[in-house]
Image (cartoon, rainbow over all chains, first blue to last red; front, side, top):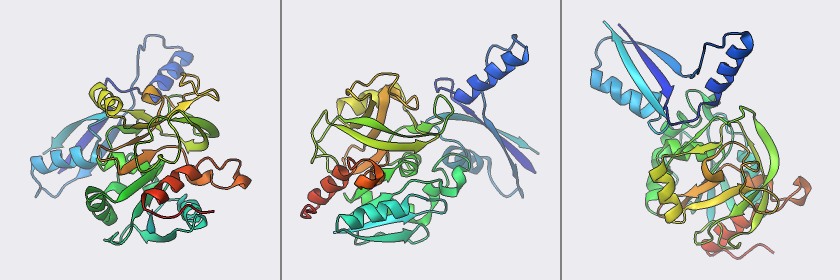
Length: 77
Length: 233
């Protein structure tokens, strides 16, 4: 059993990495890309004894910082 | 008075911090992050560095070190806590200070001497200096852009808890003088009880004339006089 946690900078928080990536994309020649944002994906391998609530707690307490980031939890059964 | 400098795996300014305190005559111990106690210390310093390689987020893993429970308890009872650079990041991650520190806006690691302006001296960390005074202190970080939501920023301003701002040599907090994109040029803040202070600049690297500035000493001297220790001659 696996879960994926996708952590992204909040829309309200400056994402200088995303801006640099967008600029690089433009230099690459694809001006159609209007914006890029850089986050991270964390893959968890689970033995199945955890609850969904425990995973959300983990996401809030450790895997993301709610001050600057949002997360999305996807559990693959 | 006794001081503890906490060592996490990846701390690298711990020696500088201990040296700065010992030079001022303070009995100072290194305390390993796996120790469970900071009992008996009047000052707890969280030094700069790259705890846990900055994995996940700066300070995110150090925050769960065993020592941090003890640091939180000590902070709640009024013990002075000083977080420098990575230490500031850890204090924010631990919820002892509001906001967060994110990637510098220009993505560069900035390592240079610059000026910070003292915004408020009604606290244990800066009362030996004057409001408006400029301190020339080095920074060395890649993720020092202070960010917080508008309500938090308003609260910090209204309660006089922004203690340091980046300025130019004339004391103007301009955008050009902002090295990392911090909100409102914020370089250091304290908690509501004013016993926890986090700052990105490194005062411990500005305590010896051989290092180009002694402006950082006033922070340690303020702490000493807060704790009733005679100022070093």
